[in-house]
Image (cartoon, rainbow, N blue to C red; front, side):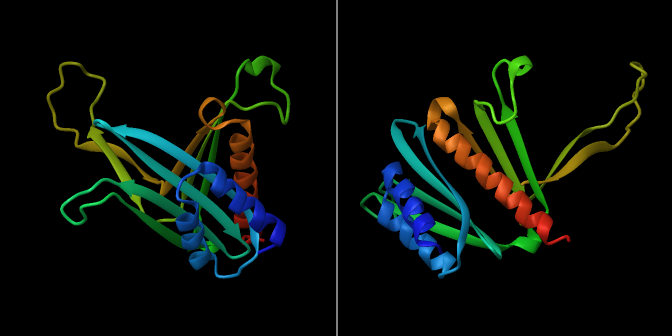
Length: 193
């Protein structure tokens, strides 16, 4: 991993303020000395009833793999009387990544210019670990028809969805997500050449 990119990744993990040593330790185990190509760090807070739950996702791209790291905190429960955190990583070989979907939301699209500000980015990455099938009853155009037309639906492959916004995360994280998406797209296209 280049020292400069490694230091920037560590700095962004620390800036998230969310168990930085645990997050970095989990990533180091998964990256195991490979050179880092790109990364994105996303910290998210959500309310679960009357408790604040925090979550951080770190996506790291190496020359050969996509590393997906998730760290969550948990309140005391029957397994542990104290609050605790869990950090998991998944290392996906780049040849397994079969879809990289980037959705951009921009204000005033008529005046948007290439490289202009983006309000929100939704990055969806699929590699076949999670498949979803959405089914609904099929029908026909006859409103009086009572026949069973079976089902219709769609299968989708969306192992990871990451949403970042300028309002919640800042323009730097939005730019980081776009840079990461471009690097991942390039890396997956390179394997097809």
